[in-house]
Amino acid sequence: MTPTRTAAASPAAIEVEGLTKRYGRRTAVDDLSFTVGTGRVTGFFGPNGAGKTTALKAVAGLARPTAGRAFLRGTPVAALRPDARLLGVHIEPCGAHPGRTGRAHLRSLAALAGLPRRRVEEVLELVGLAEDAARRRVGKYSMGMRQRLGLAAALLGDPEILVLDEPVNGLDPQGIRWLRTLLRDRAAAGGTVLLSSHMLGEAAQTVDDVIMIDRGRLVHEGTIRDLERSGESLVAVRTAAAERLAALVVAAGGRTRRDDAGALLVEGLDAAEVAQLAHRCGILLEEIARRTASLEDVFFGLTEGAER
Ligand SMILES: Nc1ncnc2c1ncn2[C@@H]1O[C@H](COP(=O)(O)OP(=O)(O)OP(=O)(O)O)[C@@H](O)[C@H]1O
Ligand SMILES: [Mg+2]
Image (cartoon, rainbow, N blue to C red; front, top):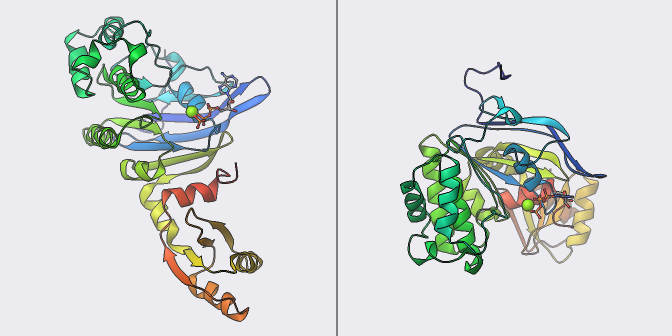
């Protein structure tokens, strides 16, 4: 019998438990655990090299973990037979032969998965490749077209669970908006999406839940709404004496960093405390404002992405 997990009546769409993946002496994923809820779009974030692709491959059964396991609907991934109706995956490279057309590639995938040919035409239409792109050789595709072809392949079986590695890469603004709508619609219909992304601002508009990793380890797991709430104590300050103020803030038990626009961001002290510190030390503040942490703020606060 296939071992299944017993606890919940309806198991999580995806559950990762103590996942570790080593390549030689390099640990790509380090004792990582997280849960992805059904009917939700979950964003998977981390700096370059954090282990996102490796973890997604393990979830999709494309990489064998060194330790730990991933479960889909309560069944260990290693015990699952390929099922295009359960899981759709897009992780580059998509495996399409450059000399074949997009349509031929999808047709062979559909045949392998026991899906009707007409489904190929449906997904080509769905991802906007139906016109001449379907007839062109994959080797001549633009990056955005390759991305759409990968999505088409993932969508072939109209799967319950979608796992997408950087699906927004290479898409134009219309493409990004189209993808957001597609993913939100799937979640609204009860589907589950796990996607990695570097486009934090865009992803914040798309995802319900957030998983952040750094150096293979979990650094944050929660809802976007909780993230916004946790950002209440963030204070943005502009001053010519930012370095001095930063040292004072740290001495007072707070933490600081800079945002892209050069403002000093303070965590752990409220605006009144920061203003008092500055006043006491004769530091002139040009601007001080309470700010809700954006996904980017949280990302840089939790990872070392800014320094690397
Ligand atoms: N097949 C492999 N052989 C050896 N090392 C690997 C392999 N795949 C990944 N790694 C290493 O594992 C670590 C994690 O890589 P991974 O590609 O999972 O990161 P990532 O978070 O997807 O990064 P990016 O944001 O750049 O896509 C890196 O140090 C990488 O060099
Ligand atoms: Mg990657």
